[in-house]
Length: 141
Image (cartoon, rainbow, N blue to C red; front, top):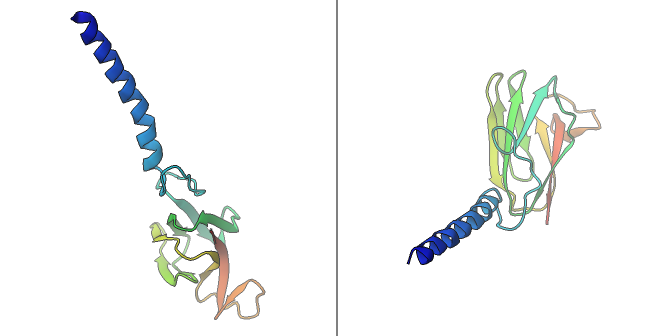
């Protein structure tokens, strides 16, 4: 009887240990079995810092897959209006605070994320309407 009890306990422990990694892998992804190309940082999602009207890391493109849950954590050295074209999301980013753009990437394409009111009408890097392109969001099918 003791042998059966010990064997059962060992079997249950092995089953439990095998189940734990599978659960955590599915929890980290918006789609079980598929990893999102967004790397998780301390706040989750992608953190971008705007300083002097530019992204500090010189990151020009954020790539995601269609259907992913996207979280962009935005920080700035001065109060800045940020607009994600195509998804029509606008956020005000204030110094010392994090503005979060969170959404599901439903539409595939390349979308500029611009700084409003930068008065860059003649700038080739302009997104139009006096907006300066900070970076692009690429949503891949």
